[in-house]
Length: 84
Image 1 (spheres, rainbow, N blue to C red):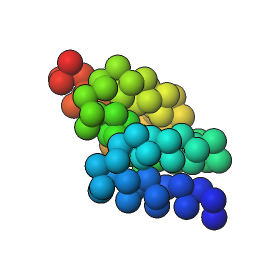
Image 2: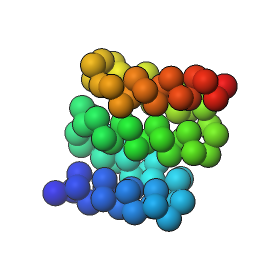
Image 3: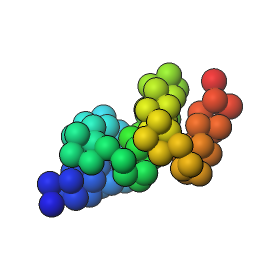
Image 4: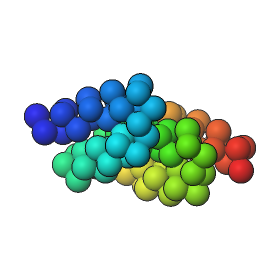
């Protein structure tokens, strides 16, 4: 239940372009469930949208350790690396 609250609020913050709050909520969600692909994706995307590419890559690499076969995370990593 708490995980859902954090992820839903993070999605709302993403839509409102409140990327810092989105990051905070996703980090809290990951403390509860650390192997959710969507959580890692939204966290990394929130960093990409504010052009914090190093931070984006850090979260993507951490997510890929937990979910090495995630096509979403791999594709986002390619996007981030091409923006560098």
